[in-house]
Length: 296
Image 1 (tube, one colour):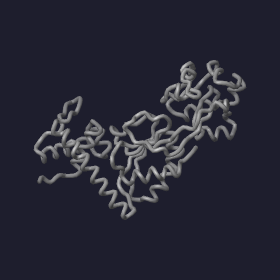
Image 2 (cartoon, rainbow, N blue to C red):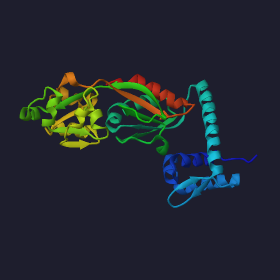
Image 3 (cartoon, rainbow, N blue to C red):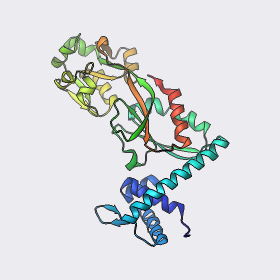
């Protein structure tokens, strides 16, 4: 039986998962040329072509498709064997890529990660903070934190906590424009919108998306902290997670309004790729985050 180089197989699978030598190289912390050499070495060892390469796309050959499927099962078996060995010694090691929304990651994830890493000093975490929805498969994300409605049914989600939201505006804005008492008054006001979710999901008032759809926006942005600063400076009314506006509400820079129309609690989820086996390091991190985050 031919002897295979495990890093060559891992490089090939990463190229298949990400769809690109460049993205695979970034995830493996290697050069594109090094990843290409590893795949070529694997093809040489097997005596067959696994990928058809063009300047625009990669396509698996029939042999490559079958080999990738078989090797994914082999890698899962290796991960499970590693988990069983580590479970015996109560030690996890290796790398884990974690993605989270920018504001939530800074405010709530980053402060608690050092405690987890002190428990597991041989584990390395690559934390990616950005408000766009990451592609776990293409970007090699092991675990992602998502807030609100989940859309991708191919992912496994674990609820680890929940957040509340508040309608708020600055005292100066409310003195100048008046304080709305009911959602029906909002079309006459300046509004600030978080544009990475639909208007109906953000301003839907108990599921009535038509209410949210009828509103106009003074400013839309893809980051909650940017909207908070705009609200503090009197630009308009925003609906934002309380962990973002808590300090401004306490010190009076913002005032909460329409409290009885505030939406219910929003779920915080840890999502991972759908696999029969979940590595110990991911299970432990999910459990730790559930303990630390809970409700904000």
